Amino acid sequence: MSKIKYDKTIKHLQGKEKILFLLTSNRWDGHNEIPKSSALAYKMQEELGKNVVTIIDVSKLKIYECEGNVSSKTGNNCGVKEALLKGDKDKTGELRCWASFNNKDDELYKVVNELLTSDAVVFFGSIRWGKMNAVYAKLVERLTWLENRWATLGEKNIIKDIEVGVISVGHNWNGEEAVKLEKKVLTFFGFKIPDDLFWSYQWTTDAKDESKSGYKEDAKAFDKEFNIMLKESVIKFADFIK
Image (cartoon, rainbow, N blue to C red):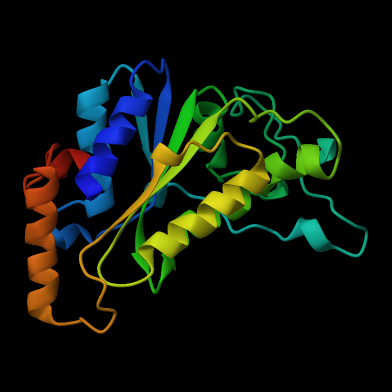
């Protein structure tokens, strides 16, 4: 079933001129493999073309936590003009996030430079404890200023023509519901929300299956369904960890 959804995603993205894949799952280097969701992204890039799809591994970027300027005593100060990132890092001239403004080594600009110039953006990540992983959550919070600019400050929605999606990989619980929640969140943001860019792979619906053998069978089933060898994957692990 997930392979059918995969094929629909590929078909939907074909013909786009510029696509961004954001990887949010991580893996300890000692495992010598990349996360399943990341493997999916690289396989899709091979099919759609490396000249079309840019991949950014967000887990390897220095991205600070959201400072919570949405709900201060003085009101919502997220995305205000005073927070515009100075210097030449922001190629779009649009990045208005206080955490970027206040932390010189913050690397959110690397995501924003690609995101705001893409036709479609897809987040790839793992399901952990029934929700999208912590790297994904941090990134979405740090992009709140995109929504605030139009929803709160009454300015132009600069992402209204960009399609967005979320593809998750989980073992045994709540993947489908987690993706539905993120679809709702990104609807609030003001992106275009095509159904074919939102889906979850989950090995079993038995939330209590935490056996070692189950996790091994999960990996084998994933390899078989998507024709991905995780140990050797679609790229060499040595290239992935650079």
